[in-house]
Length: 448
Ligand code: GLU
Image (cartoon, rainbow, N blue to C red; front, side, top):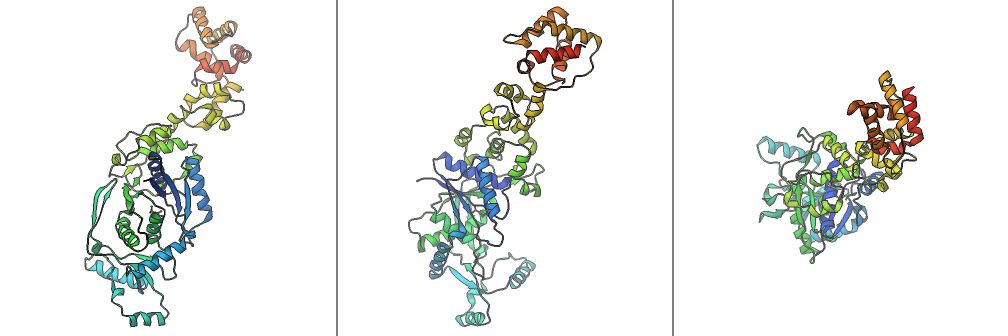
């Protein structure tokens, strides 16, 4: 059986780091078993769904390298939901209810006041045909609830949480459709999972109760309409929290736009989110295949996963240090070649900093004031400069001999005269890039 996973965002906003993590894990799960990863746009809420968010979701997934193998849109599948609705209505699993939002709220308050859980009391099931006809005559259109079967506990073996058991009598019959005919999330999602042959539903633990309800929907739908389908396996991952351990608002708005602004590599985000909250070490692994091969739901912990920006920055630097010239050349300053990239790469936290270091090569540079001893030393350096395979090595060897200097007094004035800086990329790599003529000119200028 081919593994089919899905990522099902609602296009009511941009993806945030929690969504990205869910998308990544579903992508990895599919890749690991040579399966399919489907993007499902949950756009049944016409009022809040926006096309620009659909486009942003696609663009973000592409930027992250998590392109989907297929895409479905719920707004184009309404006929399917209608037919599932009709079948469930026929089999007695859906019933109309007429309470207003205020009435429901009042019931909830009374229950809570009595110390009871706010479970829907199923009053609508007590209505007679005449009661319903009277409501309709008053012009009250019903909303629709799915009738949970109270006979048996709902159980599943969760890929992260292990054995789960729910008493359906402790759950409200969920509203699946509004009075205006529009769909709530629960039923369309269950229909799609069966219809699209989803084998693994991997999502956040905020959906655990939904899963209990949807398992009954799956069973009812299979009986009524999808005899060949199977209930998918479920896994619910612990939520992502900020460093302080709280569900932070900031994480809810932290998305690819801000990562791009900060010049964070998608590979750094992927390496972090792939293993955050698992027992596997978070490492700067740029090779996706390694992450895919080691992806394992059984390593996921139950504790909230802590997202830490400094960890992301650290990973980013380590990823940048491994990046090949070909992968970054279009982002580098004009004229910066492969040797230039290799020279500056170890000094970067972000690719965008390459330009600052490249200026040391292209100039102009600003040199500090040198003491008269250093000026004499630098003048000696200009005389001894010779161009061979490794000009820095031969220059420093000759100067050491001629001046008797070693260590910092030998190297620092040279670096300052040649680059204007006290620190920076390896001089052995920089000097050939600066070139003989320019290097001699800089030494002479410093010596003057
Ligand atoms: N659209 C739902 C959400 O964003 C999908 C949940 C699911 O994975 O089934 O929460």
